[in-house]
Image (cartoon, rainbow, N blue to C red; front, side):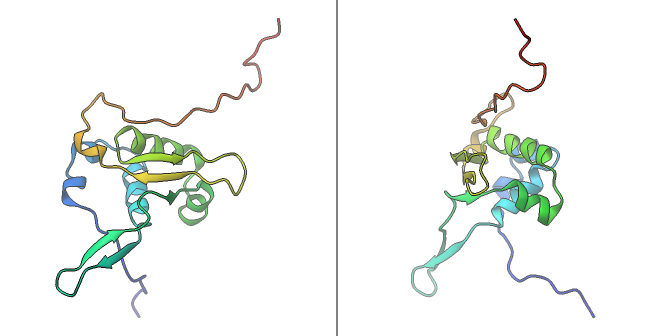
Length: 140
């Protein structure tokens, strides 16, 4: 017997995967982008023969570390590096940064800034956590 596959799939525009920004992605970032694109939900509008698919959740995509760790075995540092690359190169933008509590999830939106990306340009970055640990603050 053959393997059972999940139905459906995702659509990636040729312009996106042939772009300089996509080709410069390294590590887990290209795979993460494809997995994020697979989270999109579409609704068809229009009459038969002239229907268009419209994304309904492109501006509110949840990306959680635990989901990707449990489902794909990706570590948190690897996820952080991949998300940072997608933000810097214009594939994602931050809608809500989330918090440290379990139910406070980060929300991202898909961005089209990757079209105008050039080496040396950084569109967006995450706010770094500034937590002093260990010997970071010497005693006075």
